[in-house]
Structures are given as C-alpha cells and as structure tokens.
Length: 254
Image 1: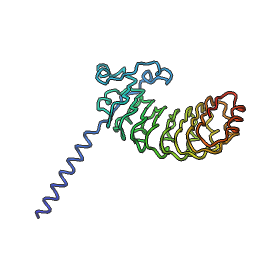
Image 2: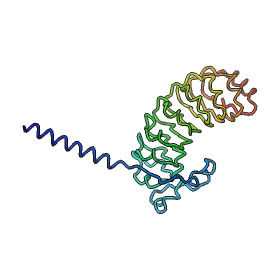
Image 3: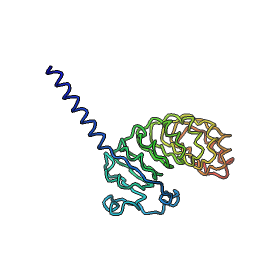
Image 4: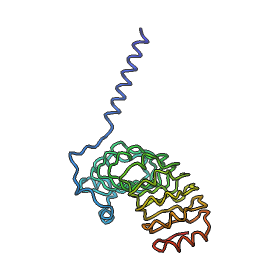
C-alpha cells in the first residue's frame, strides 16, 4: 500500500515537471504575413545591424538584423524572442549546440549564421524556417549535410565549410535555386557530374578537400558559375589550367 502511494506521488511529480517544462517553451505566433517586412537579401546588406540587445529592445519591431558575434553564448538569449521580424540572425563564434524552438517560428528569418559554434547536427528548428535562404554552419562538427535541409526549397546559399563532411549528397544537385555552395575544408573525395544540374550556381568552393578528379565537361557547361575554388586538393594543375581556359566567364582558384 505504501509503495503504491509512493508511486502515485512520483507520477504526479513527474507530470507536474513535464507540464512545467511544456509551459516554459516559448513559441511565436503571427496574425498575418506582412510582405513589406521581408527584404531581398541584397537590400539587407545596407540595413542597420543591431549588436546590443538592450538597445534593440527599445523598438523591437524594426529590428531586422541582429548580430551577437563572439559573445561566449552557450544558449540563445531569451530576449531574441522579442524580435519577431528578424530577417538576419547572426550567432557566429559562440559556444552553441542547440537553438530554442521559437527560432523555427520566425516567419521572416532568411539568413541564419551559426558559424564557429559546437553544433554536431543541424538543429531541428531550422527545418521549420519557411523563408530561410542562407544558412552558414561552417566551423562546427558536422559530418553530413542532412537530407531534411536539402529538401528545403527556399535555400539559395549553403555554407558548410570547415566541418567533417565526406560526401555531397546527391539530393543537393536537385536544389534548383542554389546560388552559393561552400564546402571548403572538409573531407570530400568525389565531385559528381550531377553538379551541372545546379544551373543557377554562381560560387562553388571545394578548397581543402581530398578531391583528385573533377567532372571536367560538367563544370565547363555551367555558364552561371563566377567563382570555382579548388585550392589544396589533389587535382592536377594541368587539368585546372585547361578548365580555366574553357571557362573564360569564371575565375578558377587553384
């Protein structure tokens, strides 16, 4: 009888704890979508970047760019919840390995910078960002580009340099709106001829990998390419010289 009572008490305490945890999870809701608060990426470059949360909180609605570089953060500050119209959130050079759930609710977030943190995987809230166009996760501890990220139709720029990636998933070559693909300083050994399927690609950075052969014909067919980086690989200099001659419209760095 005593054990039964103890079990009930433990169960009630556990339920109370779980309920408390659920209630503490912040979520963002929007009454409607205001297109005037979603800016083209090129316009965002010239817009004000806020670097002090307290100053930004004075008038949070017009805060479209927030940068918290090198703040020693082990968690995203709770105050970020107040900037519901963020287009750009920069959390570079911190100690993060996760993101709060509400980040995935940020309807206007287009650029997310998570470079040089401690991520071992892409945090789940990222997959809910409907308007995400640019994601930077270089300098972390990622071993792959997850399928769930590749399937996000909105992404145009993918920065995954300085990780431990060994291959480019074939699904990456179906990302028809991809303009920038940076996978430098990884452990990639093979570049598929399917790279030519990325018809809008302008920048391809594969420096400092383990590539020994390149799909020559596929690359020279990519008329949108402006910059191609092959430094510090095992590709023959003669081959890269020939590629540069064939691609007069682009710069090949080697």
